[in-house]
Amino acid sequence: MNPRARLCLSGVLAAVVALVISDAPVACAGLDPDPDSMGIYFDAAGNSNCLWNGPFAPFSAYLLLSNPAGPTSGFACRVSLEGAPYFLLSTDLGDAMDIDSSAEGFLVEATSPYPEIGSQIVLATFSVMLQSPSVLDFFVRPPVPPYGTCPGPVVFGDGGTRCCGVSSGNVDLPVATVNGNCGVADESRSFGAIKSLYR
Image (cartoon, rainbow, N blue to C red; front, side):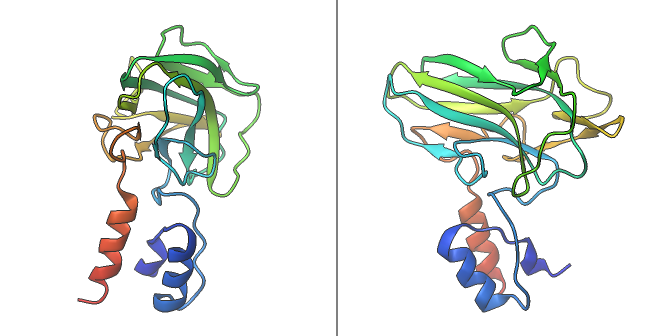
């Protein structure tokens, strides 16, 4: 595979890069090019993991599976929010059911595979409201207890379990941030990858 095809950028920069350095059109969606990678985003297309938001103004956060490696009909992970005081107003799992009773934990199974839209699957939608203008970090961590040797979250599909990565590359690093630095600096990393092509 052409290494240039791995670059995933948004907006005008993506179009310029495709025209200038690629010998064929490149289709990619979202910030994370890795297969079976979970992250929190502030849009359902996986293009925004940073948000500036004032207190008492609800916002949506999406738990996405980027670039699923196969049909996906469930998942297990923990979603942790750390930093600013907040209210979790709602958690929407669609038609799926969560049988993990812990506050952060998810063990979810749907009756049919999730639809994939633009290389993304929406696993959960959260409505969150800050109580102060402080920094709030989102983490996606492995379920408790972990599944086999998977060091991170997992997804279920086709009768099996697949180990997943997280968009930050490490379960101990935030995958998204409100009122602070980005959880994943994909634009900087991608720009560095572009510059390296000319060395």
